[in-house]
Amino acid sequence: MSEYQIHIASQTPSEAVIDSVLRCCAAFDNNDKTLFESAWVVDKAYFAMDDQVFDGMDAILGLFNNIGPLVTTHFLQNHRVEFKSDKVAHLTCYALAQHKKAGTGLDPKAIFLTSGSRYFIDVVKDESSGLWKITKFIMKLSWLDGDRAGVFGQ
Image (cartoon, rainbow, N blue to C red):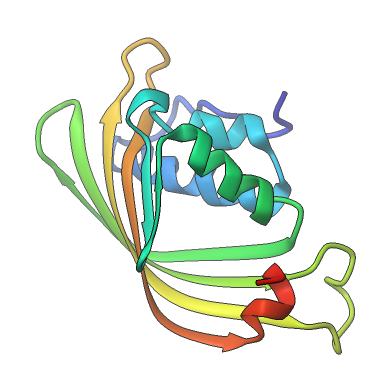
């Protein structure tokens, strides 16, 4: 169970679309699998980060299992929402993401990785929950600073 409220009734339609990516990133930052799963259409989930593709919810949950335990903070800004219909939308935004290994968040000398990127996200409205959920998430990295291998062990 998530410690975060998953459904916020007072949102405007655009805010509800944006909330899909906010739930996704807040879930990474808090290692909250319930919140993470609430952001995705399970049977249509697709995520790509440059040349890395995670097709299907099992693959995306594998990514979550690698990032969730880290100390991360994702800042999202400059959201733009284009409604294709009353149940389909496209969302873009910019992201700044900070990453450190678990337990090292307050250590100023700890290995880190910071990234700047653009997100391109397709979402649909899930009628059963009333939530907008991600079907396709494309992350295009613009820059990196720090030690990718040191944080992710790659």
